[in-house]
Length: 83
Image (tube, helix red, strand yellow):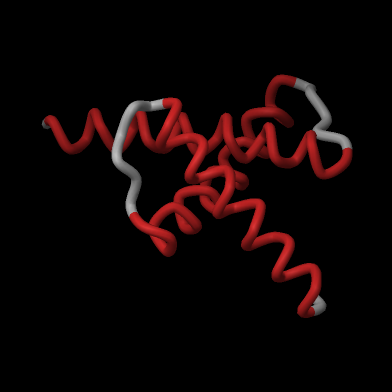
């Protein structure tokens, strides 16, 4: 992975994590925490989209999949935190 691709991957993760925390109504986890949530969410979203037969095309599609995955991750974290 080139440095430019890694930077884009991290920026999409940061934006997706931040947007997901706003959607879920939480304060967020800071820059690094939001980036981790977004990057992990991208993997979750990619898996979910593939399981449903949906293909994320282009950067916008990847971003949407990352946000969906990050929202799912935050919902799971909320349930685990309450237990």
